[in-house]
Amino acid sequence: MNSSYVNMGVGALLATLFVLKSVSLASGFIFHSETPEKPGFAIVATEEPAAGGDKGAAAKAETPIAQLLQKADVKAGEAIFKKCQACHSGEKGGPNKVGPDLWGIVDRPVAQHEGFAYSSGMKDFSKGGSEKWTYDHLYHFLAAPKKFVAGTAMGFAGLPKEEDRANVIAYLRTLADTQVPLPDPNAPAATN
Image (tube, rainbow, N blue to C red; front, side):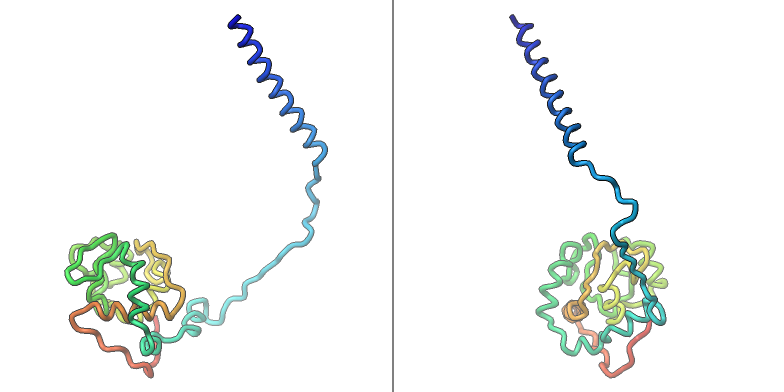
């Protein structure tokens, strides 16, 4: 009696598979379409190289950080900085996290925060500690960290809006015992 139930179950399974395969074959014949020999239309896009290269075009289009800092909003920068706190602390004597503590970052030597293991790309960029985090360096680094410092371990994509970058830098400026003076907005923009 038990084997008859097994036989019925196996028969039902095979019948179901047969019906599914038959439906699949039939729908393939009904809804079959030939692959076109040539696409309906081809979209061809060519990129014109910018005069002076990509870096030169980007630098010309940007407003200098010295001008942006004149109207930067520290409160807005503090709100944006909350994203940064996943990896960075900003308090005096704060702990290093995935990234170094950012207390006193403005005008601090690059890759020199005590107790943090910097990537080789960041160490190369620091030129042995002679390079500092100027307003201009921070501005370009926050735009696209991996483009500005090749080989950095910072996985953040960057802040595309120049106002957001200026606001964050204005906030970072407040994270210090003594705030670094703002750059002259009438001075020529720094070149990288």
